[in-house]
Length: 405
Image (tube, rainbow, N blue to C red):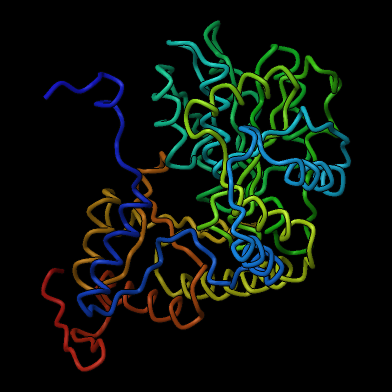
């Protein structure tokens, strides 16, 4: 079989594969605890459900413009003004089938083969593959001090004549760290000075803890004209717990939005009218569900961080937001893939190997689940890894004996 060179270079999504594995094991009756997922357990906002049901009842679920409905654009315009302090016009907005597709369409619109895209590590698993799908070159940047907080100097040192764009994800998946206001100001200034696209992946920007406030990149941009290369990505999946609705958006200059819309029109024809209708209702509706989710996630983070303290040698940078903890488990094994497989095989706990995010020896643990999931999951992990733990463990009425240490 003949497969394209680009397709051969792309690996499957590690996180989606783990979701599939967990579902298969659960279907077999296995006592799986999923600490690998990036999906809030909150219910979809009632405003979104009511709006979707009303459209279904009408029977009028039709094609939409490739860049989104008027109502969707108006909702994004209002959202951008409220949370970013920045006014845009309908031509500056493109709705899409999720924030991931918005990023993918943007990359297709701006990249040529051999162009380079820079992003700090740890990074979301899809960034390198998305860049490669465009025939371009992903350039991750690891902090010299081993922290999750990048420095402008380190990013600038990676820039070459081929550099076309920088992607910043803050709060960050997988680490949960929120980059400082100074860093955001400096990266905006650097990209403007160099004439580079700056793609702000803000999908978690309202899910932040300890009294922090979302940071608007527009505050630091000197060029807010239609020649600006600043692109802001967001969506309803995380903050509104509407992962299955697959609605996201991009805010950018009008010419780029026009090109992105042309690309999207040939890929998907445009996002679903039904799901846009639901997303509009969530954005314009009562916002209490976002704060309730944020508070739950902050409490879950506190519990997870406390549980991880029981591991001798495990290091954790306490997350500033999102719903992940990215802990250094290298004291128990340098190969994070083997470590994650051991935990899945022996104690049925799903984690995501750090190597998928560009940092070996780490595991990403999700705080999306219940407190019971978090405490029992970490307890199982400790039993599997800590040689000082008892030799036996019961999962329900199943007795496990540790015979692999």
